[in-house]
Image 1 (tube, rainbow, N blue to C red):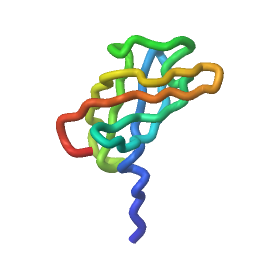
Image 2 (image 1 turned 180 degrees about the vertical axis):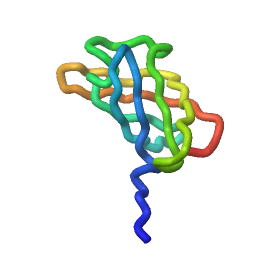
Image 3 (image 1 turned 90 degrees about the vertical axis):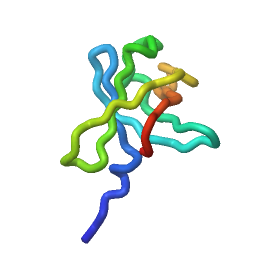
Length: 90
């Protein structure tokens, strides 16, 4: 049986009418989500407008992940780095 470990690191992002995806990155003390800036809209959004969700597998319900900071947002190079807060193990 083949397991898709990418499911452990991929998230869904909804912001300002856009829907996209991102990848979880472990830092020393927290986690980050790396995504394309266009997934967040044309301009740097408010943190409250960003909705990040994760599934444990493709059949499970989505669980919300709270964004605690926008560390980087570059619409010209089309990338964003979001610091996230979470209560349970990702």
